[in-house]
Length: 527
Image (cartoon, rainbow, N blue to C red; front, top):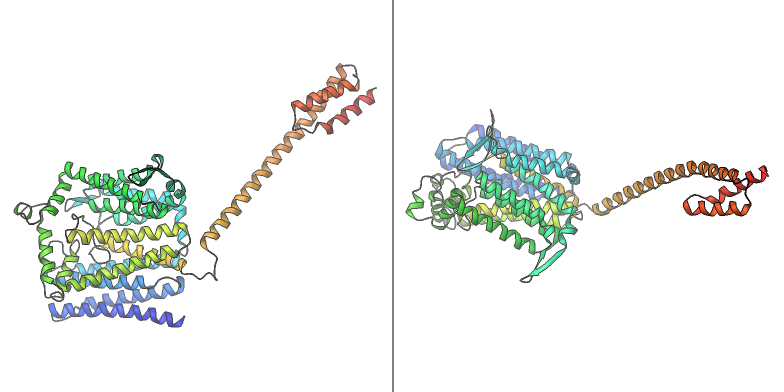
């Protein structure tokens, strides 16, 4: 155990050393010195990372430690490039990014300490849905909503600036999707008719995917945000596939989103302009267009080309030529100064996080945890794909930012919370069987015990009501038989037997055999 802890600490210290060397090298090449304010801020952030490591050992001892190390390296490289761009643009975005990083680490540490059992999120599934939808639609409010670069995806907070609520909405909607699909996986797994060799789901089971498709198209149309629309729809479809194991859901989801995107591109100009810039980036009309053209695309492509295989070196290129290079196009800026080799190393770090998340999803025995882990990993993977694919002209630009690297506080905080959730789930997945039983077995045992207790209480209540009904019915039967005997002038026992038979047929649940001797005794005493 001690050797494992030392190895984990060594990984973290190596990651911190790598980021520090890159930071110092960049400032040495660009300013021939190192600003003092960055020294104190880097020391503070490093202390927070070491605190995170200690909290993981204390509260999540079986968690995957590689995730936080990869996240640290990605963030360090991103902050280094943002500081590099600040030298050309005379801004202080990198210092603010370090402040946001400290806040993100605080939120991640809170999750590590207080969320000992991720299954508590399942209790708030519909609350998470409401919060996610409110966050997703909040930029549409006329007072707080803000439009930047043609997309209305920002919310202004007086005194604090603006943030992107869709970054937090993806977490809450992932909670809801995981809970909903876990509860309805059996119905969604039932297949319907086969068309072209693909077994389609039943029509009545397609309601959820239709609702999510409508919401995704609404985001695309109303907020002019193709990236968020694609990310949410892809997250739901991928989790639907994990829950049911049916490839038909992927086919249906792809066809539905493609059809909606094509229709939106032909109807709405802001979507069509992005598609035109993607299809014809080097045309003069698109390149010289004032808004929605291909200038950013082309400068990013030339930046990647000038970087070549090994790059120009930190501080030796001209990445600031590309607009919004510290946010949307930070991948192109990194490609220019780190080259194809550096970009492949960055993608490998993302791949390590994705692989760790998928391994966690496969190892965890709880169905809700399996869906939640896979949903979070797919969300990050889709976000990386859309950003890298948009910059390299594989798909149209979407407006999403690269997780952990791009400038922006809301993106950094949300993605650090995502990493913390993966770490919490991995702690349950890697926990030895000798310590606790399977989470699924525990849940099933608790559910069965609660159901048995509920049935027992229902049975007791039913018996109590039945006993009260019997007790109230016995005097009535006695009185009716006594009255009938008096009117008949104390009839013969045969008549009494006939009456008893009729009463027995009309009230089969009442023990008439216990009542008849009492009636006979009353008649005998009168005689």
